[in-house]
Image (cartoon, rainbow, N blue to C red; front, top):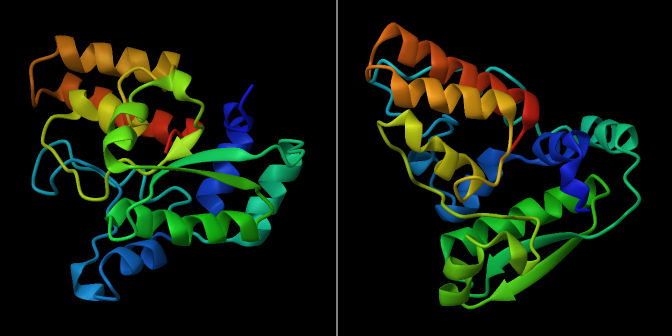
Length: 197
């Protein structure tokens, strides 16, 4: 019954976010430390692509976010954002900027402030009452099969036929094969269409 079960609410969140501003908050304003390539796959691997980057990424368009909320018939139900209370934590810094951007679009955000230990435990348990959160601001990896963890925050939360089919193909295909690369591209397309992060 969470508002983010509606894909258009998720699209509104993504449309509202200015990822550059979020990363500058994390890096203390150091633009040279900011990399805005939205894939956990290293740039020099056969799996690297720009499918996510080329589709409504970092658009920071409040008007578009409001359009998505209207399509979703969003009624102002609070979205619970799990966040570590440690203000020095990078995920906390990212959240503070993201929350202000989401609220500017008309989303109501309720912070769930917890200590870092609780945050680590709660983010992997869908029964703890949160809807969204920031789990990591730097993880990248060569193995696309692991992305169901990276993208959703914990394996299995994002339940999607397209995602599951792509993950299954990647698990059964030879690593680096044409079949495996194509399956990862299908996975990225599902990310774009279903907005799980």
